[in-house]
Length: 114
Length: 112
Image 1 (cartoon, rainbow over the protein chains, first blue to last red):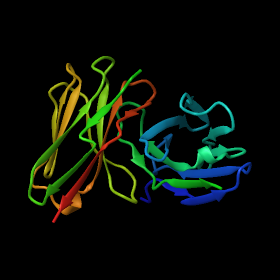
Image 2 (spheres, rainbow over the protein chains, first blue to last red):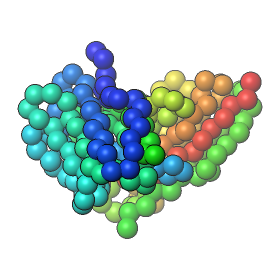
Image 3 (tube, chains in turn brown, purple):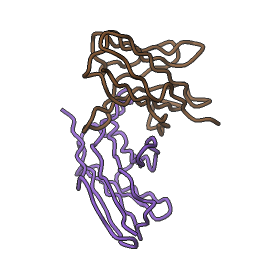
């Protein structure tokens, strides 16, 4: 069981480019969560998805950010026209169900915007 | 605004010392309280999920208690070892679509 797989682990983008971060949940998990950790801050919830559905995106900036979890393939967090303030570690977690289930985290993707 | 506070922010102890830290959370709309352990350069790993007032959970030398009426949880480590060095995070779960509210963590360093 490979756990939660995130790639790339490190991504460097210039301002204005697009960043795509991928997350494959643990086998058997159908719930995916994206978190962002900004420097000197804790984990901040961004979005919660089930297969083909966004359940809660209240933590996601309204512009430039989008997330999907298609029927086939990994969940993708997409950041368009990146700015320096988007530089952060982005963690994906998955769980079996939505009520008081343990989250299994991936190793994170560190985005650096030059 | 829901707020989760953890104290102390950081802690240095000697190998063999026992230690504990606190997580404070809202006492209303409680569904569950999570504890995670986050080692440097790794990802957070679940320690406990606690749901009932008065719950006590134990995993090896680490244990946790829960008081939902007053809104706090304690994490205890007995006989700390250098491999216990990590950041310990708690997260409050109000049951609303899994939007966990995370504390900033307690950073523990155990000196050999």
